[in-house]
Image 1: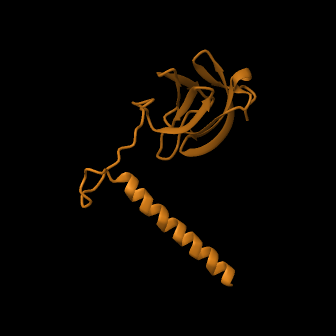
Image 2 (image 1 turned 180 degrees about the vertical axis):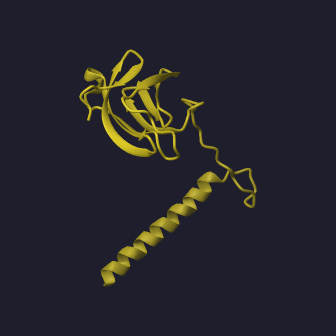
Image 3 (image 1 turned 90 degrees about the vertical axis):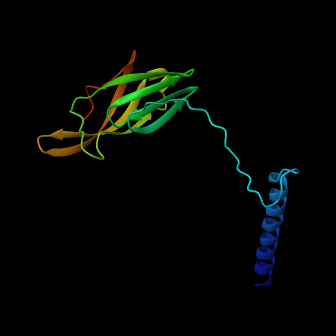
Amino acid sequence: MVKVYSILLSIVLLLSGCSLFEKERLQPKDQPEDEAVVLQPEFEVVADTLSVPWSINKVNETFYLSERTGSIVKIDNGKMERQQVELKKPLAKAAEAGLLGFVLDPEFPANQKAFAYYTYETGQEQFNRVVVLQLAGNKWTEEKDSP
């Protein structure tokens, strides 16, 4: 029991010591202590004007983002290209429906395939479907042998 308390005490002391150093490191020397320091993270926008982005995949330096509305967006060398997805069943447009999952095949560079999960409508009913997509040019097509 004493060993457990010793370990916990060591952790608390270590964490409190780190926070003191962190405060010293973040506080500029010429700034009064009572002023707040606001740190702005650096970020880079790689895509905008996306339509309900849902899934993101990366192969080498190329990103593929699925949009719930039924497109795949390819981002390569800073250039954004919206790619058409041709499905066998009509994509549902209801809330929380649409192209809901997208993952590249582990062998994607060689076979240009991906797996997709989408909601489709038949009359008044909605159903979900998992399919294989094949990329040819800038168009994804559901394979004929998908269930």
